Image (cartoon, rainbow, N blue to C red; front, side, top):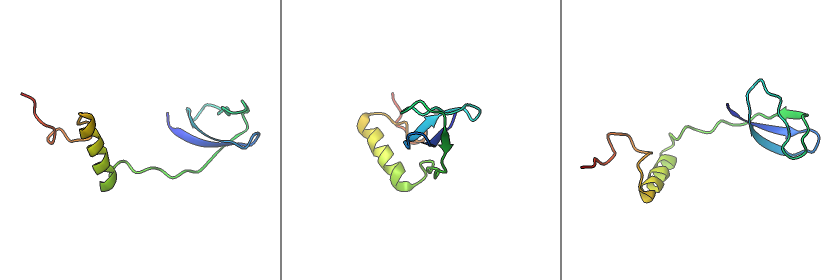
Length: 77
């Protein structure tokens, strides 16, 4: 299920909701169903070198290597 941004026409609040495309969104603020889907920019898939470098630094600091390719991970004996 994808994330969508919605604007509630009843209370004016913006919400990010995880819903099926076939579901009717409900405002978490007022409970109204008069929601308008907003056009949003898609985030890049961690291909930016700066983002990838900071993610790898954070992973190494935390002691896991989930952001590394299998060939780059240290081998345990």
